[in-house]
Image 1 (tube, rainbow, N blue to C red):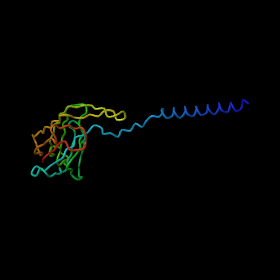
Image 2 (cartoon, rainbow, N blue to C red; image 1 turned 120 degrees about the vertical axis):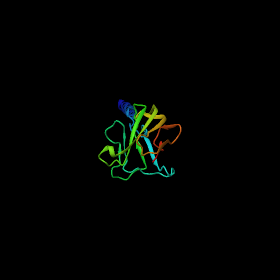
Image 3 (spheres, helix red, strand yellow; image 1 turned 90 degrees about the vertical axis):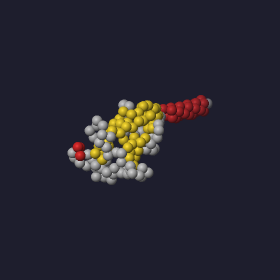
Image 4 (cartoon, one colour; image 1 turned 30 degrees about the vertical axis):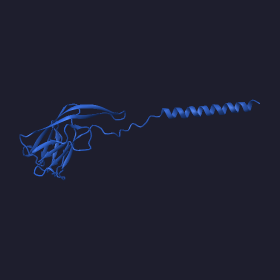
Amino acid sequence: TLYPVMTIIMKKTLYLFSLALIVTMWYGCERDEICIEENTPRLIIKFYDKDDPSKTKAVPFLAVRVAGQEDFYYDAGNKQSPDSIIVPLEVTKDKTIIELVMNATDIDPDNNESNFIEIVSERQDVFVSESCGFKTVYNNVVFTLDQTKSWISTIEAANIPQNIVDEKRRHLKVYH
């Protein structure tokens, strides 16, 4: 007579234990920490023909670096010359100076044609998500061309005011 009661109690205990185990496993799992959102945007520079501003114009043997750094961020070398490039900006400073070198195939740096562009902005750290953390966006960006030795004719911000918040469109137009 005690056997049917014990069977019912065992089944209910097993059912409650299984349910508790499933609930614990469900809420105990961590979600994946994969960042799929955009991170800190980089500066997109597009090169145009100074004689026909509606046409893009590639820069022969272009090399680009952030001033003060030894290595070039971009170096075309003997590859095809680009009509646009993407350059990272300083995330800890309000000012970045980039060096654009045309015909950068010569070993002697005095023979290279260098130009410097100063980028000044108001940096803002924006929370993206738990998995991505923060990204830096650049507001009210101002571009200044050093024209002491210039292969670049002029530069122009793509938008006024220029904000760099994504990499979906160009930020700076360079005419040469």
